[in-house]
Image 1 (cartoon, rainbow, N blue to C red):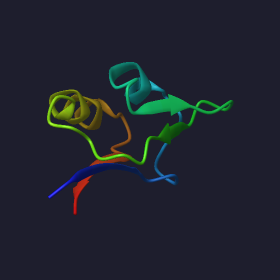
Image 2 (cartoon, one colour):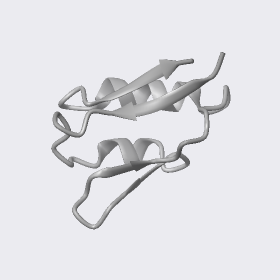
Image 3 (spheres, helix red, strand yellow):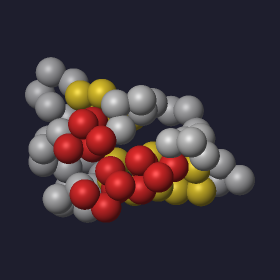
Length: 66
């Protein structure tokens, strides 16, 4: 199984916390909205990805498993 990050663009309010916590997989566009790396989240980054999901103020970021 592989894990991927997903963002709900309607719920996201461009706080940018996710990109600060997981810059290896998340960058921000010119308006401050997240741009997610489509590669699977590695086991080395999973703890950081979970932290970014947990700290999202609008709960717009999730981890999905395929």
